[in-house]
Image (cartoon, rainbow, N blue to C red; front, side, top):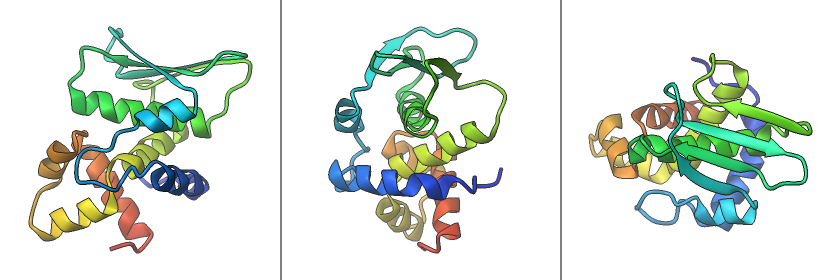
Length: 163
């Protein structure tokens, strides 16, 4: 799947969030809680049907809400949190709109996936671990994300000539 051309539109937000909230300052998994709080986004864990990992709910005059499938393993939950956060930030809704992760893949889903990869996989850790010979699966385990996000962050790093 190609990197969305519009990912560049997200980079200022991503860089600012990473810097302001020091999301990439430690070796432990990225913690999105301060960013979600600042953006006034409510996060809830609940059973979701039909293989859904996450759900963003936007309603006028109410704070956005992210619902994460409580049945999923933590790496999938963390990946879905970031994915849905990107939907809220990038895909500003009309008065009422719902975005389901798990729906047929489209451009907005690609943006959300690559944006989530950029947020949750720090370039420094990716570079160090790849040079040390770790696989993407091992890096994903360390960062508590799904392996596809590590691969996507690697693709971004190559495209942006960060490696």
